[in-house]
Length: 609
Image (cartoon, rainbow, N blue to C red):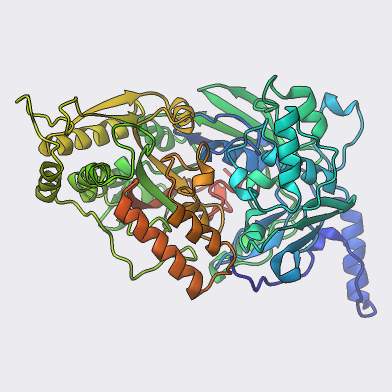
Protein backbone atom coordinates (compact mmCIF):
# COMPACT_ATOMS: atom_id res chain seq x y z
CA UNK A 1 0.00 0.00 0.00
CA UNK A 2 1.19 3.51 -0.73
CA UNK A 3 1.42 5.08 2.75
CA UNK A 4 1.06 8.60 1.34
CA UNK A 5 -2.64 8.29 0.58
CA UNK A 6 -4.04 11.31 -1.24
CA UNK A 7 -7.10 12.92 0.27
CA UNK A 8 -9.83 13.62 -2.23
CA UNK A 9 -12.50 16.33 -1.98
CA UNK A 10 -15.92 14.98 -0.92
CA UNK A 11 -18.06 13.77 -3.85
CA UNK A 12 -20.72 16.22 -4.99
CA UNK A 13 -23.50 13.81 -4.01
CA UNK A 14 -22.64 14.23 -0.33
CA UNK A 15 -24.07 17.79 -0.22
CA UNK A 16 -21.71 18.78 2.58
CA UNK A 17 -21.69 22.46 3.59
CA UNK A 18 -18.61 24.37 2.42
CA UNK A 19 -17.59 27.97 1.79
CA UNK A 20 -18.54 29.30 -1.64
CA UNK A 21 -18.29 32.74 -3.26
CA UNK A 22 -21.48 34.82 -3.50
CA UNK A 23 -23.54 33.32 -6.37
CA UNK A 24 -23.83 35.17 -9.68
CA UNK A 25 -27.08 35.39 -11.65
CA UNK A 26 -25.85 32.60 -13.91
CA UNK A 27 -25.13 30.44 -10.89
CA UNK A 28 -28.59 31.12 -9.47
CA UNK A 29 -30.13 30.17 -12.79
CA UNK A 30 -28.22 26.90 -12.73
CA UNK A 31 -29.40 26.18 -9.20
CA UNK A 32 -33.00 26.84 -10.25
CA UNK A 33 -32.65 24.35 -13.11
CA UNK A 34 -31.29 21.71 -10.74
CA UNK A 35 -34.11 22.28 -8.27
CA UNK A 36 -36.68 21.91 -11.02
CA UNK A 37 -35.00 18.74 -12.24
CA UNK A 38 -35.62 17.04 -8.91
CA UNK A 39 -33.68 13.97 -7.63
CA UNK A 40 -31.32 11.95 -9.81
CA UNK A 41 -33.11 9.47 -12.06
CA UNK A 42 -33.32 5.85 -10.90
CA UNK A 43 -31.87 2.90 -12.80
CA UNK A 44 -33.67 2.05 -16.05
CA UNK A 45 -35.54 -1.18 -15.26
CA UNK A 46 -36.20 -1.78 -18.95
CA UNK A 47 -32.47 -2.42 -19.46
CA UNK A 48 -30.67 -5.70 -18.74
CA UNK A 49 -26.92 -6.23 -18.85
CA UNK A 50 -26.11 -9.85 -19.81
CA UNK A 51 -22.86 -11.53 -18.78
CA UNK A 52 -21.52 -15.06 -18.23
CA UNK A 53 -19.47 -16.82 -15.55
CA UNK A 54 -17.52 -20.04 -16.30
CA UNK A 55 -18.39 -21.51 -12.87
CA UNK A 56 -21.18 -21.08 -10.35
CA UNK A 57 -20.79 -19.03 -7.20
CA UNK A 58 -20.50 -20.68 -3.78
CA UNK A 59 -22.70 -18.18 -1.91
CA UNK A 60 -23.11 -14.57 -0.89
CA UNK A 61 -21.80 -14.10 2.63
CA UNK A 62 -18.84 -11.70 2.25
CA UNK A 63 -17.11 -12.68 5.49
CA UNK A 64 -17.01 -16.39 4.66
CA UNK A 65 -16.76 -16.63 0.89
CA UNK A 66 -13.45 -16.37 -0.88
CA UNK A 67 -13.97 -17.42 -4.47
CA UNK A 68 -13.72 -14.84 -7.22
CA UNK A 69 -17.16 -15.36 -8.73
CA UNK A 70 -19.03 -14.95 -5.46
CA UNK A 71 -17.09 -11.73 -4.86
CA UNK A 72 -18.29 -10.34 -8.20
CA UNK A 73 -21.89 -10.63 -7.02
CA UNK A 74 -21.09 -9.46 -3.50
CA UNK A 75 -19.43 -6.30 -4.78
CA UNK A 76 -22.76 -5.26 -6.31
CA UNK A 77 -24.94 -6.35 -3.37
CA UNK A 78 -22.79 -5.10 -0.50
CA UNK A 79 -20.80 -1.91 0.05
CA UNK A 80 -17.13 -1.43 0.83
CA UNK A 81 -15.82 1.46 2.91
CA UNK A 82 -13.44 2.46 0.14
CA UNK A 83 -13.22 1.76 -3.56
CA UNK A 84 -11.10 2.67 -6.58
CA UNK A 85 -11.91 5.50 -8.93
CA UNK A 86 -13.46 3.73 -11.92
CA UNK A 87 -11.71 5.66 -14.69
CA UNK A 88 -8.55 7.13 -13.13
CA UNK A 89 -5.18 5.47 -13.78
CA UNK A 90 -2.93 4.80 -11.90
CA UNK A 91 -5.51 3.45 -9.47
CA UNK A 92 -6.57 5.78 -6.67
CA UNK A 93 -8.50 5.02 -3.51
CA UNK A 94 -11.69 7.01 -3.02
CA UNK A 95 -14.33 6.93 -0.26
CA UNK A 96 -17.40 4.75 -0.81
CA UNK A 97 -19.53 4.31 2.31
CA UNK A 98 -16.85 6.30 4.11
CA UNK A 99 -17.10 10.08 3.96
CA UNK A 100 -13.33 10.44 3.42
CA UNK A 101 -10.20 8.32 3.33
CA UNK A 102 -9.26 6.86 6.73
CA UNK A 103 -7.22 8.78 9.29
CA UNK A 104 -4.12 6.76 10.18
CA UNK A 105 -2.61 7.66 13.56
CA UNK A 106 -0.26 6.35 16.24
CA UNK A 107 2.39 5.23 13.79
CA UNK A 108 -0.07 3.12 11.82
CA UNK A 109 -1.64 1.41 14.85
CA UNK A 110 -4.91 3.38 14.92
CA UNK A 111 -7.23 3.82 11.95
CA UNK A 112 -10.38 5.95 12.11
CA UNK A 113 -13.05 5.83 9.40
CA UNK A 114 -16.07 8.11 9.31
CA UNK A 115 -19.20 6.91 7.50
CA UNK A 116 -21.69 8.73 5.33
CA UNK A 117 -25.12 9.38 6.79
CA UNK A 118 -28.25 8.08 5.10
CA UNK A 119 -27.07 4.77 3.64
CA UNK A 120 -29.78 2.10 3.90
CA UNK A 121 -29.96 -1.67 3.51
CA UNK A 122 -32.17 -3.11 0.81
CA UNK A 123 -35.70 -3.57 2.19
CA UNK A 124 -36.18 -7.04 3.70
CA UNK A 125 -38.84 -8.62 5.99
CA UNK A 126 -36.21 -8.99 8.72
CA UNK A 127 -36.33 -5.20 9.20
CA UNK A 128 -40.09 -5.32 9.90
CA UNK A 129 -41.04 -2.58 7.48
CA UNK A 130 -38.56 -0.01 8.80
CA UNK A 131 -35.72 1.62 6.92
CA UNK A 132 -32.47 0.19 8.26
CA UNK A 133 -29.50 2.57 8.16
CA UNK A 134 -25.92 1.38 7.83
CA UNK A 135 -23.86 2.31 10.91
CA UNK A 136 -20.39 1.76 12.29
CA UNK A 137 -21.81 -1.03 14.48
CA UNK A 138 -22.53 -3.02 11.30
CA UNK A 139 -18.85 -2.97 10.40
CA UNK A 140 -17.88 -3.90 13.95
CA UNK A 141 -20.27 -6.88 13.86
CA UNK A 142 -19.20 -7.95 10.37
CA UNK A 143 -15.49 -7.78 11.12
CA UNK A 144 -15.94 -9.61 14.43
CA UNK A 145 -17.46 -12.45 12.40
CA UNK A 146 -14.09 -12.87 10.68
CA UNK A 147 -12.35 -13.59 14.00
CA UNK A 148 -15.21 -15.69 15.47
CA UNK A 149 -13.86 -19.28 15.70
CA UNK A 150 -17.39 -20.60 15.19
CA UNK A 151 -17.70 -18.88 11.82
CA UNK A 152 -14.34 -20.30 10.66
CA UNK A 153 -13.92 -17.52 8.11
CA UNK A 154 -11.35 -18.22 5.39
CA UNK A 155 -10.62 -14.50 5.52
CA UNK A 156 -9.21 -14.63 9.03
CA UNK A 157 -5.79 -13.69 7.61
CA UNK A 158 -6.95 -10.06 7.35
CA UNK A 159 -7.24 -9.66 11.14
CA UNK A 160 -5.49 -12.66 12.66
CA UNK A 161 -3.22 -11.64 15.55
CA UNK A 162 -3.71 -7.96 14.66
CA UNK A 163 -6.65 -6.48 16.59
CA UNK A 164 -5.85 -5.21 20.08
CA UNK A 165 -7.66 -7.28 22.71
CA UNK A 166 -8.94 -9.89 20.27
CA UNK A 167 -6.93 -12.79 21.73
CA UNK A 168 -8.90 -12.74 24.97
CA UNK A 169 -12.24 -12.60 23.17
CA UNK A 170 -11.29 -15.47 20.86
CA UNK A 171 -10.00 -17.59 23.76
CA UNK A 172 -13.26 -17.05 25.67
CA UNK A 173 -15.24 -18.08 22.59
CA UNK A 174 -13.25 -21.28 22.19
CA UNK A 175 -13.78 -22.11 25.84
CA UNK A 176 -17.51 -21.36 25.91
CA UNK A 177 -18.29 -22.41 22.34
CA UNK A 178 -19.92 -19.04 21.63
CA UNK A 179 -18.46 -15.73 20.53
CA UNK A 180 -19.68 -12.69 22.51
CA UNK A 181 -20.49 -10.09 19.88
CA UNK A 182 -21.63 -7.62 22.52
CA UNK A 183 -18.33 -7.69 24.44
CA UNK A 184 -16.18 -4.59 24.03
CA UNK A 185 -13.16 -5.14 21.79
CA UNK A 186 -10.43 -2.53 22.06
CA UNK A 187 -9.26 -3.18 18.53
CA UNK A 188 -12.66 -2.65 16.91
CA UNK A 189 -15.12 -0.05 18.18
CA UNK A 190 -17.93 2.19 16.99
CA UNK A 191 -17.11 5.50 18.68
CA UNK A 192 -20.51 6.78 17.55
CA UNK A 193 -23.03 5.63 14.90
CA UNK A 194 -20.85 6.99 12.09
CA UNK A 195 -17.28 6.58 13.38
CA UNK A 196 -15.34 3.31 13.23
CA UNK A 197 -12.04 2.90 15.08
CA UNK A 198 -9.51 0.11 14.53
CA UNK A 199 -6.62 -0.37 16.95
CA UNK A 200 -3.83 -2.74 15.96
CA UNK A 201 -1.16 -4.48 18.01
CA UNK A 202 1.40 -3.35 15.44
CA UNK A 203 1.26 -1.44 12.15
CA UNK A 204 -0.34 -3.13 9.15
CA UNK A 205 0.18 -0.90 6.16
CA UNK A 206 -2.03 -2.97 3.91
CA UNK A 207 -5.23 -2.81 5.95
CA UNK A 208 -6.51 0.44 4.42
CA UNK A 209 -6.35 -1.10 0.94
CA UNK A 210 -8.28 -4.13 2.22
CA UNK A 211 -11.17 -1.78 2.99
CA UNK A 212 -11.87 -1.92 -0.75
CA UNK A 213 -12.51 -5.69 -0.64
CA UNK A 214 -15.85 -7.43 -0.30
CA UNK A 215 -14.60 -9.40 2.73
CA UNK A 216 -14.72 -6.18 4.75
CA UNK A 217 -18.13 -5.01 3.54
CA UNK A 218 -20.95 -4.81 6.08
CA UNK A 219 -23.81 -7.22 6.77
CA UNK A 220 -26.70 -6.57 9.14
CA UNK A 221 -26.77 -8.61 12.34
CA UNK A 222 -30.51 -9.17 11.99
CA UNK A 223 -29.94 -10.82 8.60
CA UNK A 224 -27.32 -13.24 9.91
CA UNK A 225 -29.51 -14.10 12.91
CA UNK A 226 -32.53 -14.73 10.69
CA UNK A 227 -30.99 -16.45 7.67
CA UNK A 228 -27.69 -17.91 8.85
CA UNK A 229 -27.42 -21.65 8.35
CA UNK A 230 -27.63 -23.64 11.55
CA UNK A 231 -24.29 -24.56 13.02
CA UNK A 232 -22.13 -22.09 11.14
CA UNK A 233 -24.10 -18.80 10.93
CA UNK A 234 -23.29 -18.39 7.23
CA UNK A 235 -26.00 -16.59 5.23
CA UNK A 236 -25.02 -17.94 1.82
CA UNK A 237 -28.27 -17.67 -0.11
CA UNK A 238 -29.99 -14.59 1.34
CA UNK A 239 -27.73 -11.56 0.94
CA UNK A 240 -29.03 -8.20 2.15
CA UNK A 241 -26.70 -5.28 1.56
CA UNK A 242 -26.52 -1.57 0.82
CA UNK A 243 -24.97 -1.86 -2.65
CA UNK A 244 -26.36 -0.82 -6.04
CA UNK A 245 -28.10 -4.17 -6.66
CA UNK A 246 -29.85 -6.93 -4.77
CA UNK A 247 -30.13 -10.63 -5.57
CA UNK A 248 -33.46 -11.28 -7.26
CA UNK A 249 -32.90 -14.90 -8.27
CA UNK A 250 -30.26 -17.62 -8.04
CA UNK A 251 -30.79 -20.89 -9.88
CA UNK A 252 -27.78 -22.94 -8.87
CA UNK A 253 -25.54 -23.93 -11.72
CA UNK A 254 -27.65 -22.00 -14.21
CA UNK A 255 -28.19 -18.28 -13.67
CA UNK A 256 -28.31 -15.29 -11.33
CA UNK A 257 -30.45 -12.17 -11.63
CA UNK A 258 -29.66 -8.89 -9.87
CA UNK A 259 -32.00 -5.90 -9.75
CA UNK A 260 -31.27 -2.29 -8.89
CA UNK A 261 -31.53 -1.52 -5.17
CA UNK A 262 -34.40 0.99 -4.68
CA UNK A 263 -32.71 2.26 -1.51
CA UNK A 264 -29.32 2.89 -3.10
CA UNK A 265 -27.99 6.31 -2.21
CA UNK A 266 -27.35 9.12 -4.70
CA UNK A 267 -24.06 8.29 -6.40
CA UNK A 268 -23.19 9.93 -9.70
CA UNK A 269 -21.10 8.81 -12.64
CA UNK A 270 -17.43 9.72 -12.05
CA UNK A 271 -16.17 13.03 -13.38
CA UNK A 272 -12.45 12.21 -13.54
CA UNK A 273 -10.56 9.95 -15.91
CA UNK A 274 -7.97 9.77 -18.64
CA UNK A 275 -8.14 11.88 -21.82
CA UNK A 276 -9.69 8.95 -23.70
CA UNK A 277 -12.61 9.00 -21.22
CA UNK A 278 -13.59 12.62 -21.92
CA UNK A 279 -16.53 11.84 -24.24
CA UNK A 280 -17.88 9.19 -21.85
CA UNK A 281 -17.67 11.55 -18.87
CA UNK A 282 -19.40 14.30 -20.84
CA UNK A 283 -22.24 11.95 -21.85
CA UNK A 284 -22.87 10.57 -18.35
CA UNK A 285 -21.80 13.39 -16.04
CA UNK A 286 -24.31 13.74 -13.21
CA UNK A 287 -26.17 10.50 -14.03
CA UNK A 288 -27.22 8.48 -10.99
CA UNK A 289 -25.78 4.99 -10.57
CA UNK A 290 -26.52 2.24 -11.31
CA UNK A 291 -27.59 2.94 -14.88
CA UNK A 292 -29.03 -0.47 -15.81
CA UNK A 293 -31.94 -2.00 -13.91
CA UNK A 294 -31.01 -5.69 -14.17
CA UNK A 295 -27.90 -7.85 -14.39
CA UNK A 296 -28.40 -11.34 -15.83
CA UNK A 297 -25.53 -13.75 -15.19
CA UNK A 298 -25.53 -17.05 -17.09
CA UNK A 299 -23.37 -19.94 -15.86
CA UNK A 300 -21.71 -21.29 -19.03
CA UNK A 301 -18.90 -23.66 -18.10
CA UNK A 302 -17.52 -24.50 -21.54
CA UNK A 303 -15.48 -21.93 -23.44
CA UNK A 304 -16.99 -22.38 -26.91
CA UNK A 305 -20.61 -21.85 -25.85
CA UNK A 306 -19.61 -18.63 -24.06
CA UNK A 307 -17.98 -17.22 -27.18
CA UNK A 308 -20.87 -18.39 -29.36
CA UNK A 309 -23.34 -16.67 -27.01
CA UNK A 310 -21.40 -13.42 -27.39
CA UNK A 311 -21.27 -13.73 -31.17
CA UNK A 312 -25.03 -14.38 -31.18
CA UNK A 313 -25.46 -11.07 -29.26
CA UNK A 314 -26.76 -12.90 -26.19
CA UNK A 315 -23.98 -11.45 -24.00
CA UNK A 316 -23.09 -7.78 -23.76
CA UNK A 317 -19.43 -8.29 -22.96
CA UNK A 318 -17.16 -11.27 -22.48
CA UNK A 319 -13.78 -12.01 -20.99
CA UNK A 320 -12.42 -14.23 -23.75
CA UNK A 321 -11.60 -17.77 -22.60
CA UNK A 322 -7.85 -18.13 -22.95
CA UNK A 323 -8.15 -21.27 -25.07
CA UNK A 324 -10.15 -19.31 -27.66
CA UNK A 325 -8.15 -16.09 -27.89
CA UNK A 326 -6.69 -17.13 -31.25
CA UNK A 327 -10.21 -17.33 -32.67
CA UNK A 328 -10.69 -13.65 -31.88
CA UNK A 329 -7.25 -12.02 -32.08
CA UNK A 330 -4.69 -12.46 -34.84
CA UNK A 331 -1.19 -10.95 -34.92
CA UNK A 332 -2.03 -8.75 -31.98
CA UNK A 333 -5.17 -7.30 -33.59
CA UNK A 334 -8.89 -8.00 -33.37
CA UNK A 335 -10.10 -10.05 -36.35
CA UNK A 336 -12.02 -8.21 -39.07
CA UNK A 337 -15.36 -9.89 -38.41
CA UNK A 338 -15.40 -8.37 -34.92
CA UNK A 339 -14.10 -4.98 -36.04
CA UNK A 340 -16.82 -4.73 -38.70
CA UNK A 341 -19.44 -5.49 -36.03
CA UNK A 342 -18.20 -2.53 -33.97
CA UNK A 343 -16.93 -4.77 -31.15
CA UNK A 344 -14.19 -3.40 -28.91
CA UNK A 345 -11.24 -5.43 -27.58
CA UNK A 346 -8.86 -4.71 -24.71
CA UNK A 347 -6.02 -6.69 -23.12
CA UNK A 348 -4.61 -6.14 -19.63
CA UNK A 349 -2.26 -8.01 -17.30
CA UNK A 350 -4.25 -9.22 -14.31
CA UNK A 351 -3.06 -8.83 -10.70
CA UNK A 352 -3.17 -12.62 -10.50
CA UNK A 353 -1.09 -15.77 -10.21
CA UNK A 354 -1.99 -19.20 -11.59
CA UNK A 355 -0.09 -21.82 -9.59
CA UNK A 356 -0.06 -25.53 -8.80
CA UNK A 357 0.30 -26.42 -5.14
CA UNK A 358 1.33 -29.59 -3.31
CA UNK A 359 -0.33 -30.52 -0.04
CA UNK A 360 2.60 -30.30 2.38
CA UNK A 361 0.76 -32.51 4.89
CA UNK A 362 0.14 -35.30 2.39
CA UNK A 363 2.24 -38.37 3.28
CA UNK A 364 3.33 -38.85 -0.34
CA UNK A 365 4.16 -35.37 -1.72
CA UNK A 366 4.35 -33.39 1.53
CA UNK A 367 7.14 -32.92 4.02
CA UNK A 368 10.35 -30.95 4.36
CA UNK A 369 13.01 -33.66 4.11
CA UNK A 370 15.41 -33.68 1.12
CA UNK A 371 13.67 -36.63 -0.57
CA UNK A 372 10.25 -34.93 -0.47
CA UNK A 373 11.68 -31.63 -1.69
CA UNK A 374 13.39 -33.53 -4.51
CA UNK A 375 10.10 -35.18 -5.55
CA UNK A 376 8.23 -31.87 -5.74
CA UNK A 377 11.06 -30.10 -7.57
CA UNK A 378 11.28 -32.97 -10.06
CA UNK A 379 7.55 -32.75 -10.76
CA UNK A 380 7.85 -28.99 -11.28
CA UNK A 381 10.88 -29.40 -13.59
CA UNK A 382 9.07 -32.16 -15.45
CA UNK A 383 6.11 -29.94 -16.36
CA UNK A 384 6.36 -27.74 -19.43
CA UNK A 385 4.67 -24.59 -18.21
CA UNK A 386 5.83 -22.65 -21.27
CA UNK A 387 3.91 -25.08 -23.49
CA UNK A 388 0.80 -24.55 -21.37
CA UNK A 389 1.07 -20.78 -21.85
CA UNK A 390 1.86 -21.06 -25.56
CA UNK A 391 -0.55 -23.79 -26.63
CA UNK A 392 -3.35 -24.14 -24.08
CA UNK A 393 -3.46 -20.49 -22.96
CA UNK A 394 -2.71 -19.15 -26.46
CA UNK A 395 0.13 -17.01 -25.19
CA UNK A 396 -2.05 -15.21 -22.66
CA UNK A 397 0.35 -15.53 -19.78
CA UNK A 398 3.80 -14.59 -18.53
CA UNK A 399 5.96 -17.18 -16.70
CA UNK A 400 5.95 -16.38 -12.98
CA UNK A 401 9.24 -15.78 -11.24
CA UNK A 402 7.76 -15.28 -7.75
CA UNK A 403 4.45 -15.27 -5.88
CA UNK A 404 3.93 -11.48 -6.18
CA UNK A 405 2.71 -10.63 -9.70
CA UNK A 406 4.22 -8.01 -11.94
CA UNK A 407 2.61 -4.61 -11.36
CA UNK A 408 1.91 -5.03 -7.64
CA UNK A 409 4.02 -3.49 -4.90
CA UNK A 410 6.65 -5.94 -3.67
CA UNK A 411 7.38 -7.57 -7.04
CA UNK A 412 11.13 -7.87 -7.61
CA UNK A 413 11.92 -7.64 -11.35
CA UNK A 414 15.44 -8.95 -10.75
CA UNK A 415 14.34 -12.34 -9.37
CA UNK A 416 14.53 -15.04 -12.03
CA UNK A 417 12.29 -18.15 -12.23
CA UNK A 418 13.65 -21.34 -10.64
CA UNK A 419 13.00 -25.03 -11.33
CA UNK A 420 12.44 -24.36 -15.03
CA UNK A 421 11.35 -27.13 -17.39
CA UNK A 422 14.15 -29.70 -17.65
CA UNK A 423 12.91 -33.32 -17.87
CA UNK A 424 16.44 -34.75 -17.96
CA UNK A 425 17.34 -32.99 -14.71
CA UNK A 426 14.01 -34.11 -13.23
CA UNK A 427 14.74 -37.76 -14.03
CA UNK A 428 18.26 -37.47 -12.59
CA UNK A 429 16.93 -35.94 -9.38
CA UNK A 430 14.36 -38.72 -8.98
CA UNK A 431 17.03 -41.37 -9.58
CA UNK A 432 19.33 -39.74 -7.00
CA UNK A 433 16.67 -40.07 -4.29
CA UNK A 434 15.71 -43.63 -5.30
CA UNK A 435 12.36 -42.85 -6.94
CA UNK A 436 12.87 -45.61 -9.50
CA UNK A 437 10.84 -48.09 -11.53
CA UNK A 438 11.32 -51.15 -9.36
CA UNK A 439 8.71 -53.46 -10.92
CA UNK A 440 9.25 -52.69 -14.61
CA UNK A 441 5.80 -51.22 -15.33
CA UNK A 442 7.25 -47.97 -16.68
CA UNK A 443 6.39 -45.91 -13.61
CA UNK A 444 8.55 -45.09 -10.63
CA UNK A 445 7.91 -46.31 -7.09
CA UNK A 446 8.69 -44.74 -3.73
CA UNK A 447 12.16 -45.31 -2.26
CA UNK A 448 10.76 -48.15 -0.13
CA UNK A 449 8.97 -49.77 -3.08
CA UNK A 450 5.42 -48.57 -2.41
CA UNK A 451 3.40 -47.19 -5.36
CA UNK A 452 4.01 -43.59 -6.39
CA UNK A 453 0.71 -42.26 -7.75
CA UNK A 454 0.09 -38.49 -7.82
CA UNK A 455 -3.56 -37.45 -7.66
CA UNK A 456 -4.37 -34.00 -8.96
CA UNK A 457 -7.63 -32.04 -8.79
CA UNK A 458 -9.20 -31.02 -12.10
CA UNK A 459 -12.50 -29.55 -13.30
CA UNK A 460 -14.54 -31.26 -16.07
CA UNK A 461 -14.26 -28.59 -18.77
CA UNK A 462 -12.49 -28.52 -22.13
CA UNK A 463 -9.65 -26.22 -21.09
CA UNK A 464 -8.69 -28.35 -18.12
CA UNK A 465 -8.96 -31.52 -20.18
CA UNK A 466 -6.21 -30.07 -22.36
CA UNK A 467 -4.20 -29.21 -19.28
CA UNK A 468 -4.70 -32.74 -17.92
CA UNK A 469 -3.36 -34.16 -21.18
CA UNK A 470 -0.23 -32.01 -20.96
CA UNK A 471 0.37 -32.94 -17.33
CA UNK A 472 -0.08 -36.64 -18.14
CA UNK A 473 2.29 -36.46 -21.10
CA UNK A 474 4.93 -34.63 -19.08
CA UNK A 475 4.69 -36.90 -16.04
CA UNK A 476 4.81 -40.02 -18.23
CA UNK A 477 8.04 -38.64 -19.70
CA UNK A 478 9.72 -38.65 -16.27
CA UNK A 479 8.09 -41.91 -15.13
CA UNK A 480 5.49 -40.58 -12.67
CA UNK A 481 1.97 -41.98 -12.73
CA UNK A 482 -0.67 -39.24 -12.56
CA UNK A 483 -4.40 -39.58 -11.87
CA UNK A 484 -7.08 -36.88 -11.68
CA UNK A 485 -9.77 -36.09 -9.12
CA UNK A 486 -12.50 -34.72 -11.39
CA UNK A 487 -15.02 -32.46 -9.63
CA UNK A 488 -16.75 -29.16 -10.27
CA UNK A 489 -14.78 -26.17 -9.06
CA UNK A 490 -16.83 -25.36 -5.90
CA UNK A 491 -16.47 -28.98 -4.74
CA UNK A 492 -12.72 -28.98 -5.37
CA UNK A 493 -12.45 -25.75 -3.40
CA UNK A 494 -14.14 -27.35 -0.41
CA UNK A 495 -11.85 -30.37 -0.65
CA UNK A 496 -8.82 -28.11 -0.95
CA UNK A 497 -9.67 -26.09 2.14
CA UNK A 498 -10.15 -29.34 4.06
CA UNK A 499 -6.72 -30.60 2.99
CA UNK A 500 -8.20 -33.46 0.95
CA UNK A 501 -6.35 -32.79 -2.32
CA UNK A 502 -2.79 -33.91 -2.95
CA UNK A 503 -2.20 -31.41 -5.73
CA UNK A 504 -4.26 -28.82 -7.61
CA UNK A 505 -3.78 -26.00 -10.11
CA UNK A 506 -5.58 -22.91 -8.89
CA UNK A 507 -5.41 -19.14 -9.19
CA UNK A 508 -5.34 -16.18 -6.83
CA UNK A 509 -6.34 -12.69 -7.88
CA UNK A 510 -5.63 -9.64 -5.77
CA UNK A 511 -8.26 -7.07 -4.95
CA UNK A 512 -5.64 -4.61 -3.67
CA UNK A 513 -2.48 -2.93 -4.94
CA UNK A 514 -0.16 -4.66 -2.45
CA UNK A 515 1.29 -8.10 -3.21
CA UNK A 516 1.35 -9.29 0.40
CA UNK A 517 -1.78 -11.44 0.06
CA UNK A 518 0.03 -13.73 -2.38
CA UNK A 519 2.73 -14.44 0.19
CA UNK A 520 -0.02 -14.88 2.76
CA UNK A 521 -1.05 -17.94 0.73
CA UNK A 522 1.97 -19.67 2.29
CA UNK A 523 1.78 -18.27 5.85
CA UNK A 524 1.31 -21.13 8.32
CA UNK A 525 -1.52 -19.45 10.24
CA UNK A 526 -3.55 -19.41 7.03
CA UNK A 527 -3.71 -23.20 6.75
CA UNK A 528 -7.30 -24.26 6.23
CA UNK A 529 -8.29 -21.10 4.37
CA UNK A 530 -5.78 -19.31 2.10
CA UNK A 531 -2.90 -21.70 2.53
CA UNK A 532 -4.08 -24.62 0.37
CA UNK A 533 -0.55 -26.02 0.33
CA UNK A 534 -0.64 -26.14 4.15
CA UNK A 535 2.94 -24.88 4.06
CA UNK A 536 4.44 -24.31 7.50
CA UNK A 537 8.00 -23.08 7.87
CA UNK A 538 9.09 -20.86 10.80
CA UNK A 539 11.72 -19.04 8.71
CA UNK A 540 9.07 -18.05 6.15
CA UNK A 541 6.61 -17.00 8.86
CA UNK A 542 9.15 -14.73 10.54
CA UNK A 543 9.86 -12.94 7.27
CA UNK A 544 6.15 -12.57 6.53
CA UNK A 545 5.40 -11.14 9.98
CA UNK A 546 8.33 -8.71 9.68
CA UNK A 547 7.11 -7.54 6.27
CA UNK A 548 3.72 -6.61 7.73
CA UNK A 549 5.45 -4.02 9.92
CA UNK A 550 6.79 -2.08 6.93
CA UNK A 551 5.23 0.20 4.34
CA UNK A 552 5.92 -0.35 0.67
CA UNK A 553 9.69 0.18 0.48
CA UNK A 554 12.91 -1.43 -0.79
CA UNK A 555 13.34 -2.97 2.67
CA UNK A 556 10.00 -4.72 2.45
CA UNK A 557 10.61 -5.83 -1.14
CA UNK A 558 13.85 -7.43 0.06
CA UNK A 559 11.86 -9.47 2.61
CA UNK A 560 9.41 -10.48 -0.11
CA UNK A 561 12.33 -11.68 -2.22
CA UNK A 562 13.69 -13.84 0.62
CA UNK A 563 10.25 -15.45 1.00
CA UNK A 564 10.13 -16.08 -2.75
CA UNK A 565 13.53 -17.75 -2.61
CA UNK A 566 12.28 -20.06 0.16
CA UNK A 567 9.37 -21.03 -2.12
CA UNK A 568 11.85 -21.83 -4.88
CA UNK A 569 13.90 -24.06 -2.57
CA UNK A 570 11.10 -26.00 -0.83
CA UNK A 571 8.77 -26.08 -3.87
CA UNK A 572 5.36 -26.15 -2.15
CA UNK A 573 4.21 -24.59 -5.44
CA UNK A 574 4.87 -24.58 -9.13
CA UNK A 575 4.45 -20.76 -9.52
CA UNK A 576 2.94 -21.04 -13.00
CA UNK A 577 2.19 -17.75 -14.72
CA UNK A 578 0.65 -14.29 -14.53
CA UNK A 579 -2.45 -14.03 -16.74
CA UNK A 580 -3.55 -11.57 -19.38
CA UNK A 581 -7.24 -10.70 -19.45
CA UNK A 582 -8.90 -10.09 -22.84
CA UNK A 583 -12.30 -8.44 -23.04
CA UNK A 584 -14.80 -8.18 -25.90
CA UNK A 585 -17.48 -5.50 -25.60
CA UNK A 586 -20.55 -5.08 -27.78
CA UNK A 587 -20.93 -1.66 -29.45
CA UNK A 588 -24.06 -0.82 -27.46
CA UNK A 589 -22.33 -1.10 -24.07
CA UNK A 590 -21.17 2.23 -22.65
CA UNK A 591 -18.83 2.85 -19.71
CA UNK A 592 -16.79 -0.37 -19.86
CA UNK A 593 -13.13 -0.01 -18.95
CA UNK A 594 -10.96 -2.85 -17.72
CA UNK A 595 -10.11 -2.50 -14.04
CA UNK A 596 -7.44 -4.61 -12.36
CA UNK A 597 -9.31 -4.93 -9.08
CA UNK A 598 -12.98 -4.63 -10.10
CA UNK A 599 -13.48 -7.00 -13.00
CA UNK A 600 -17.22 -6.43 -13.39
CA UNK A 601 -18.00 -2.71 -12.81
CA UNK A 602 -21.71 -3.19 -13.39
CA UNK A 603 -23.09 -0.04 -11.81
CA UNK A 604 -21.08 2.13 -14.25
CA UNK A 605 -22.28 0.36 -17.39
CA UNK A 606 -25.11 1.31 -19.70
CA UNK A 607 -26.82 -0.52 -22.57
CA UNK A 608 -27.81 1.74 -25.47
CA UNK A 609 -29.11 -0.25 -28.43
